[in-house]
Amino acid sequence: MAAPTLTTGASTGKAAGAARGARARRGPARLPSVKTAVITLVAYVVAVLFLLPYLEMLITSVRPQRELFDRDYLPHHFAWSNLTNMWGSAYGILSSVRVSLEIAGGSTVLVLLVALPAAYYTSRHRFRGRGAFLLLVLATQMLQPTALIVGIYKEFLSFGLLNINPVWSLILVNAGFNLAFAIWILNAYIGSIPYELEEAAMVDGHGRVGALMRVTVPLALPGIVTALIFTFISAWNEFISALALTTSSDDFPLTVRLDSFIGQYTVDWQHLFGASLVATIPVFILFALIEGRVVGGLTAGSIK
Amino acid sequence: MSAIPSPRRPGPRARAGAAGGTGGRRPPGRQLARFRPLLWLGPAIALIAVVVIWPIVAMIQTSFRHITPLGIDIGSAGGSNFSAIFGNPNLPGILVRTVIWVATVVAITMVISFGLAQLYNQRFPGRRLTRWAIIAPWAASVMMTALIFRWMLKTDSGVIYLFLHEIGLIGSFTASSPDWLGNPDIAMACMISVAVFVSLPFTTYVLLAGLQSIPGELYEAARVDGASHWYAYRHITLPLLRPAFAVATVINLMNVFNSFPIIWEMTRGGPGYETSTSTVFMYDLKGTFVGQAAAMSIVNFALVVVIIVVFLRVNGWNRAEGS
Image (cartoon, rainbow over all chains, first blue to last red; front, side):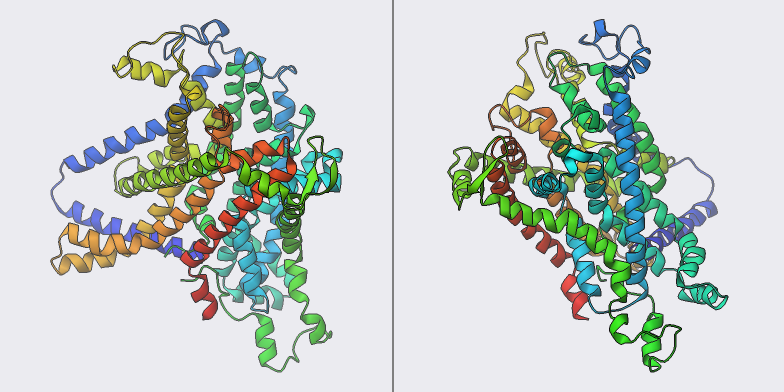
């Protein structure tokens, strides 16, 4: 049970911290120890190292064309206009952002519609085939589009879905490969909601679905938000199925669009990284919101 | 602890059953009720069927078909796709490289993450902020991270090269310096570093969750008993961290084996196949011989299944089902 275990973990951690804090407060006030200072320093240096590539992304995106290949850390001039020019239709970045939003938004909605009933039912009921179903979900989680890409490609080719609009195919693929995460997270959250609350709502005259919508969904909201954001981000970032399933440049999501920049004779590095930055910053913020809850869904609660 | 969340309490149906099955508003008999789970699980099963099961079937079928580079199926190929794969002179090198790639990336990731998890488990001002910073490569698209590294590693203008030059590790720095990513050995070392970089946040977070779930009372008890820090570390922290360590290792094995964007964006697997892993090789074949690509996928898939079985073992699935 991912969420409850993690919560317990966090609260004991907090309790221990509080105890330590109390001990520290009892003693005379003093400067932080050398150990704390060293730890703080190292932690900040590591954090900066993790951000440096993305800082370089920003710097390159505003390098003037003339200074693109200069051997320095910072350009002499900052061409902020790069960040507005890149939306020109010649680059196709704007249309790709729209396609990426459609794919990510569509798969997020689909995952919620499919995972919520499954997570609810497996959390509240024991029935024949429950174990088999959860085993199937767990196996799905371990497979990735990469491993099945040739099959996925052949399948959608035979459906003819590629000729209609690859966006639909990509919504299905991304929803399918994020289903397991959503089911684990929702399962754990629903499992931690007392069933009596739903019963009370049903006694009050709401049906099973009414109780689900009025009681369970609001209480499981942190889990639902985590599942939604996680699915959105992974569909937004997904690369290999988008590369395999899109042929017309009108259908390119952002990742495939940027990949197509690389093949050209002169690579528009500044626009490439401008678009990367636009794609990355919202994702950082969204991910920071769910950061503490992601591990539980990815490890299927197997960590004690 | 089981990998499978168990219901918090017996569901209403179970209790209704115990009471003789007379309760409830719906008259339909047990026959219909047996299919009730399908109503709730059906959509999920259908999605898994379309996105996972069907592709597996399609992949197996394709691996026995003879398909021209133009995509025309000209009949059964028997086992010739497989024999073409195994007869490919590039395959031994690719397989060896795949093993080195997976083993090095996962090993280095686990070691560094083990240190990082303990670092970020300490209390210090700004811990939250620094932990947010290290999720950056996890949140960002791996292909974009790979592209920025490709840019930074450019030997005519890249900042990594510039930095190594300034601290004196690299002598000359001119527009004609030999391209790093064109040299298979250097390119592999660079790509392994990038793969470690993008694997660190997830791994560190799993180990952090493992560390934080160790009850503080255990350390208190050890302290009362007069155990040293080092003793407590070896006899409490390390053993209790083992499940988290195992899970992180297996998930990383899977991710790194299936890793495609890093190599694709940095070298496209070239020159020749000299920086290809089996995943990149499989994708490259898809452009010309889909049948052979499918055959290669089956080989990869077999390896993936082995990793999954190990994962389920690590997760204690058998124990969970046995109870």
